[in-house]
Length: 62
Image 1 (tube, rainbow, N blue to C red):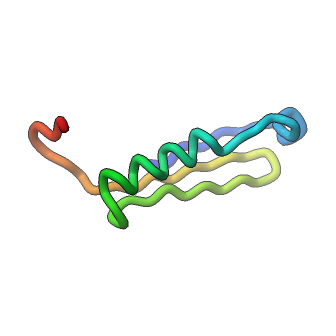
Image 2 (cartoon, rainbow, N blue to C red; image 1 turned 90 degrees about the vertical axis):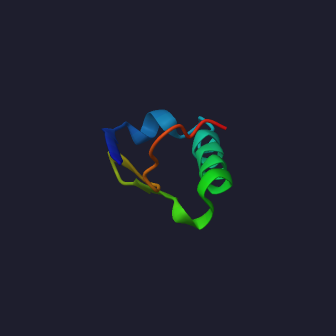
């Protein structure tokens, strides 16, 4: 899954960031180990996140 957004880099300079992405990475690692990945790319006016994880079928509730 890939999600892309435009953003204003100047408006994000003094705001803390990355906590949500770090949390997602930890959850993916806890659930899938090395079978999942989260890639982040931040360019001048463009932010992209690519999420990869194994497909699951059936009742996967834990």
